[in-house]
Length: 112
Image (cartoon, rainbow, N blue to C red; front, side, top):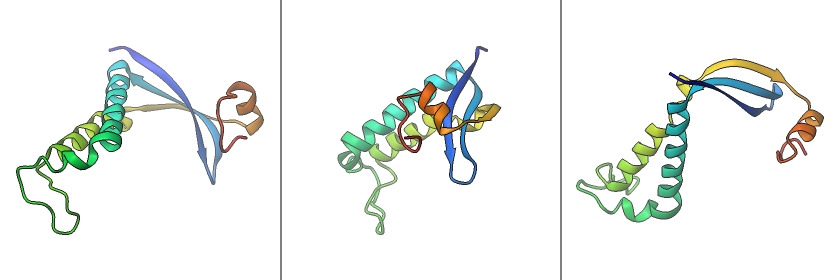
């Protein structure tokens, strides 16, 4: 299986900024992309009305139905986007805000 290395900036209040490098498979990256797009679509465009397409009762506290199109779309998006547990940490390299501004000028907060 094809393994890829993904690098991204991470900022934690207590540890500062670091460049994280993870090893993932191409399938995991594709699954994440589809999941986040699907979740974003459900959340931004169809969230309210998809929960009205239901085949079970609404929850009396939250007013949403677990047996509904919205719930199924939400669960599918969560499953597609839940690949973090399959990532393998390769490295965590501490970097300074100056390094971020020089090498990744498109990064904004908290490095401005």
